[in-house]
Length: 272
Image (cartoon, rainbow, N blue to C red; front, side, top):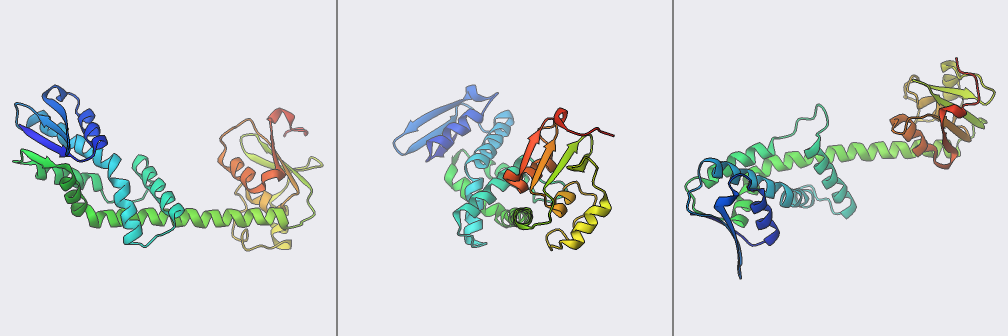
């Protein structure tokens, strides 16, 4: 017989439900001092061993990892602001689902799997709280490195938000004399004066020189958002049938009430 004792009912049920093909061999029992999941009439070997490892990993992923990262954030990196910590934990969850391309993250779950495999060998009884603490100790240095990557991502996100705020401040407070621009999404983004003639790159360069601003000084002229920031019109009308265009969403975020979105069919000028 093999038994795992849990002090927390949610974790015990999560483990039990994670056992799939061998579940008929396991039983769930509730006691005054906790909860047991037992493998009856068999030792922990073969498919039962493999599924137990997978179930332990699932419980740790869902119930322990965020708490471990929060502890590292607070006690190793000394973050105290609850909103900052919460946002970094959200980034950590995003990393699990889809880590950023090119980012080398320490393979924490690979290390955990290897540790649990060794931990379970020749045991007939496991206290989950003790296993969890041992797992944390085994991957602590990797967890610190992993959390550091999350902090780097958070800082980049924070810096980007500050930049967006500076762009927003420019378009709301810089008077360039431009009252209205039309932006057409027709496979590419093209800006038009209110008279119907398209804006040239040379015009955008001229406005960047005439109305200088550190927040736009180094933006590439070919980036579709740059002309709107350079000309900083009092009103921007976007004509597009796309609902998830990242550059257009960014412009709406920057210009706020100064921007409006219309279907392409309402574009007032002749195209081409």
